[in-house]
Length: 214
Image (cartoon, rainbow, N blue to C red; front, top):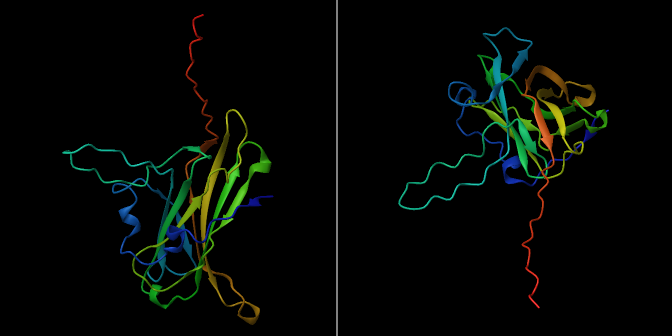
């Protein structure tokens, strides 16, 4: 059974789920390096379809550039397959709902992240995005950022642990008893590349002080 981990709901990037004019095609090949996933609906494709993509990143520190060289654009990191869990890292996901019926669909998006250990089974983890995102008829992408704090993911000592990450996006609709939210006609998922997660050990270097000459 997976253990739940908590995502900080007060992080500005986590709270920022608004429309920004970007599309999935902006992030997948040939325009980007995100992993494309599967998107399924109960409707004919001409009425409702979608696309989803995600990426694992460990943000880099911006490089210091000496003038007069022009500064290069600072990106929040490239796709990662090796993660140092004692530093912050993130899983970003974007998806879009397309088709003639898209503007008539109502509900909320529930986003979950599954981290399956391929080593010790007790290390399996699961995270629910702290915000349910309204299905609002936007024509660009919905997006969510799972910000993983340092040491939130536990790994085996020495060589670390390989993990298979999956992001799932479920449309929830209030069609249950007493209008309870239940899974609706749309589900999407991304199986991300296998990662190796480990704890970086940095040895402290001390300068040897020569003994005084007597």
